[in-house]
Image: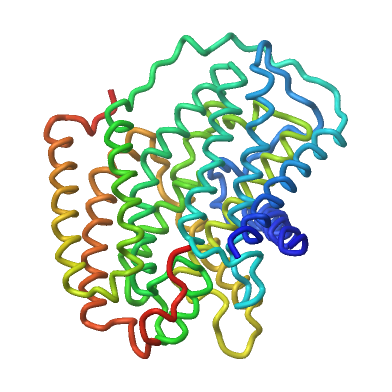
Length: 312
Length: 105
């Protein structure tokens, strides 16, 4: 049990360090770094009259959120901190703790930049959660399970990566994942114009925790993309953990390379994009995937009903 | 089965709390005061309608998760049920859009 917990912490921290090293070289030259920007580490930033508890709680909550999300990332059928029955649902719930953390950290600072970051991040949540949830429904429907291990196994049994069966769902996932991780072109809460949002409102140990949790956030979200759409740890020749790491880094590099080459979007544009394009497309995608399943795509050869994982 | 699984979750939460506290405690650095005016009362938020519509849609999205797990076993019946549900949701979006709710104010 303690080993599992340490494993989850290791995934979050190791992933965060890896992303911290890899992300900036991938950005387009001259692009705004957003959450990959520099945090103040040598000084402890003290706003004039912060709410001391909320201000301090921000980065801590963010780190707790990404560490909890790492609990359901599988590196092989056995090498997973804990195979919760409701893994995918658990994941989208705990990742949103990062939003709570940014909102508290920004609001608690009681400075114009901090409060602006708080409002922007909540608007971003309102934009991405529903289309993200709709994008995740497709793999769950095909795999008949919410467990990440079951979803990987279902893909390898059917001999089909879900990115092939559901290209629309994957496109939706990439866009919403960029919103969820605050990477370009959706980096308004960390824009340079509000001097990096919460990154400039904390420093020292808190700044370090921000850097770590924002990098780890990108890692776990890309890992979930690899599990849902690229068959996770399953693959020939190499051992499972190697495949998982390769696929995660592939998804991550694709997201960052694509995102940093697009024009940055304002929060209002993002809300309009989400509600006028992404959510209708997501609803259509659920019906499309449903139709494909009725036609038998991704379903053969499947064990008889009842032997699968099912909800927790 | 459930209790040990979520004990791991609780341990991870405590571990992250511990690491964060450790980082703050170990990195003893000088304090830099951040001079800025107070800001709590000087902002208004422009997405109130989005937020209200979001509450409804977030709940409805949650209802689709159990349906998605059993969908392949139930087949056509589940598909038609969801067709009605998604039809209602789309009508909801269309209504909010038509009434000018999907605008930053």
